[in-house]
Image (tube, rainbow, N blue to C red; front, side, top):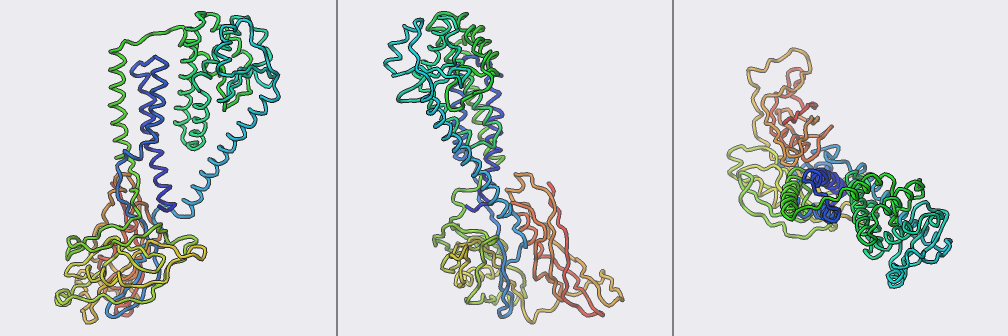
Length: 547
């Protein structure tokens, strides 16, 4: 998968996550799920679901984008690249590459900041003053000894902080000794419950997730909800253990009063001031859920989430995981039918753009006219999408535009025997996507007659006039994504009024540029004239795509 496809998938994955989280974050409030423990499990399930979204997505084959090189005249027809675009009509490689580089750099910086945070916590612990266990917390001493927990006091914090796994530490602010003994017991109990639950590992995991998905605001909202639900669960455990709800609420308010700043993101903190109101409300209004309410709510949540996952996969499909693998090719006199083998394994094709130097054709047979096509004076374009590997061999992937009466098959057979000097990236051979165009044209074919409806001007040079055209079809991916806009084509028209070359001056993504270019080869023109004689000419034309 190249940078353009990877950025496409990242954008669509972000949209999938946004749709699922937008619905999932609202469900507990709509279904009145008040239990903190149930909400905490639900939030973690929702977090796991967004990582599984690619497995449930509606995967679709990628049409890909192909970059041209120069054509070569052979025999009775032109054989060369499709020249379908002067600019790649999907997300440009430099833009995609540098966008991904920027996202990756931010992830690396955030992960590095997480590592620095770990070292700063260890340093803070070494610089803190050890504390004896408060007399009021003697009932907790046995549990603390079992967990090898130590207490420390530091002026660098305004709220208690717990971190560590093998030798956990509770860092307390200097004003801890000014609290009443029952409040001290409640605070220490809160931190010991965090240690017993291994919450520090959960906090560390959430920090890594936030570093990787830093660009998605709803992921930040979800992680905030997880942290709040975890604190509410611990709050209820403290009240159950101490049987002193009022004392614990006073401890929350007293600690919150001095907790401005000094937040340690890699530790479980006793309180965040912005969550204080929600936590106090949760403790004051405990409303147990009936089993029926709980089961029906969870069932409804599961159904809605599954539907949202399905909708996200259909609305924002990711590119197939096997998008670079060769596909079976079907070609008949109508473009589909007979299977043509393309089983050679090719790894890692690139787009010919940026630093990728295009391949050059060395040799290979010219495709032949069939007798049936010659008798019918059939002319036109066959466009093949191929992969040219690091050895310069061609593997046909797909017929983008075919011709009947065996011409498509002859083009495929000839292309498979062509030999190229491979494309290179930084001097190293690489496999690349490519389009090959075969312009089947009879030397003795009569030029298309000039219809009487075309008025001839007496001036020396007259531009070409469009006589007939075919509509460029929407690709399935572009239709699902709702892509609209216009493609600007630059056409070369020969003296017979036949389009011989198409360059995309301004494209659209998801195959619309290629679609417009392929359709243009079927257009017919009254040729340009000079002093009444047909001549070759160029013309720019705009093709609109609207749903």
